[in-house]
Image (cartoon, rainbow, N blue to C red; front, top):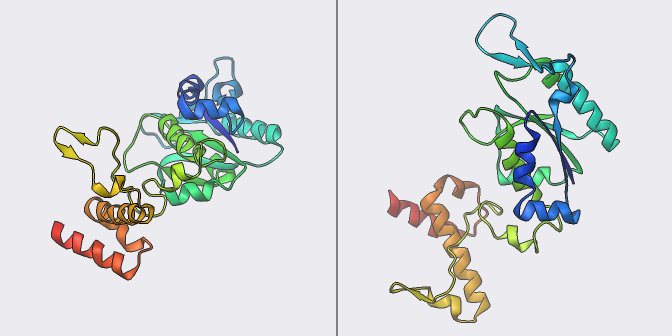
Length: 245
């Protein structure tokens, strides 16, 4: 997968995406991430990419032409039309289900907004969808773009050591992750559950599944309705939710 990020702050994005697991995956060639300085496509010597809004109002609006030129340049580089996403508080909320859907694309382009947003005409002509990372407003689209890039990159082959690293995590299968423990076996008088050092793999698997259901019912009961559960598991979840009322 290749991810292109159109931004006013490519150095900010690069500093995050060059570290840790994503940085190692980029260096190994498991994923290609390119950050583009929008000002390089500005139309004047001052490299302006914004102007006042028609109809009045506070703040400035990002110009359509620099964004269009940058996106068209990316299309030429990739010899394809990337799936174009605008990070916006108006967009649909990012979920693990959406990430699994996006992971099937070979090319994705992310537009980071600023100021009062972006000229609607460039959104109407080029953008395929708008995505939000939550019901709040940030000063720019860089942090949402980094969140989406990180969460999407880790689903790509070769980024994590094994698919199980993300398939057993919270949200991947519609449930929260089960509790996890490490050494020592007893810490400040609290021991880990006996089943985890029993060596019985099926009992451990069942315990983890039950704990995922319990965690979800306690902390995110809204997720239970759409989770794929057996009748027995749903009864367990409903009992937990009733006890929490």
